[in-house]
Image 1 (cartoon, rainbow, N blue to C red):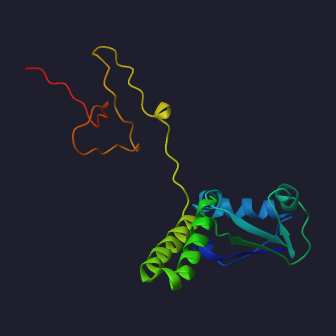
Image 2: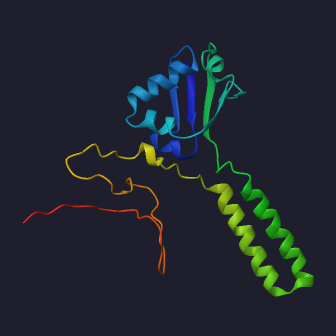
Amino acid sequence: MAIVRFYGDLQRYGRKFNLNVVNAAEAIRALALQIPGLRQHIQGDYYRVRIAGNDINESGLQYGMLTVLKENDVIHIIPRSVGSKSGIGIFQAVAGVALMVASIWLGPAAFGAGLGLLMGGVATMLTKTPKTKKAEEGATNNNTSFSSLDNTVAQGQPVPLCYGRMMIGSKVLSQGLSTE
């Protein structure tokens, strides 16, 4: 008999489960089969796993999940806070703090700029960078019945916004053909 405990956002599926299983992998498999949406939720995030008082890291996860459990061993699954994993946020935050300290000599405008840098750095560290498809991965137009020389944009791709007179190529959002 093992006890599985969920924490954080996983608690919407339940807090504590008593299962008669051999190892942690069997426990997770049993819960994923019984609770709709649990498998997709677990696969989409990062979690800290603690089995019988031992933290399991990513390199030892496969071995740790297959370790035979003793009676009343507890499996803790705790959501991990992850950010963008980009180093720019920490430098931006440090520069913001330095500018706020330097505002003693530079004036109040430097404090406001430093505060903005600090908040931007923290936001950068906490936010994941969205993954966009490359232009080659976008929808391809294989229709050769008409001229396909238009430079079209795949769905979800950024579109440049220019002001004034420009001498550049276009990014067509939508294209149609009408005959009369």
